[in-house]
Picture (cartoon, rainbow, N blue to C red):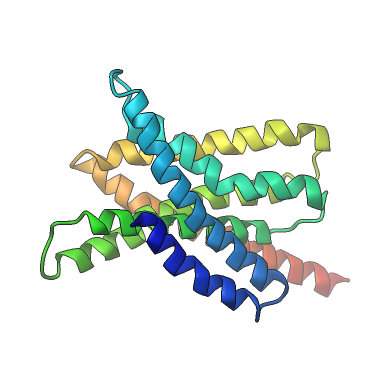
Length: 219
């Protein structure tokens, strides 16, 4: 069923691509990839969880963040060598689109297994939208924006840079999954952190626009 949902969501977006141009087409492409990454992660996480079932590993903390953050950011890892140094802060938007595409697929998985009735599913969907969905988008956006901020570094440092940003995303993702499993202050922090991080990324993104406008006026 998860593959069927992916196709139902991705095929219309692929037709939409015919009418789009430039960055719009790239953004939708990253969104579609996020959906695809969600399918791959679903089966890969399940296989790895079964493989390590006899160990003390907690899949949601040790396996899922590693797999999911790699898959979501994979287009970034692949396009950078092709584009050279020709990239800007729009990497944040592209990366976030991939993360949100992933979140859409994951939300379907969780909602399809939900046993709540009445307004329960609606409340649950809204809560996931402002927590887990934002978390997925922001974790990938950190990698994209981090690449932009360090774009002046030498190409030889790129592998180390990508690994460092990837590690940060994994760590924050794992911490979120860990805290959300607990009640009290830990859960409150986990719920509020994605929205806070989203606002910070939004400010950073628009601050870049402001800086660009100021520089343009000076010229």
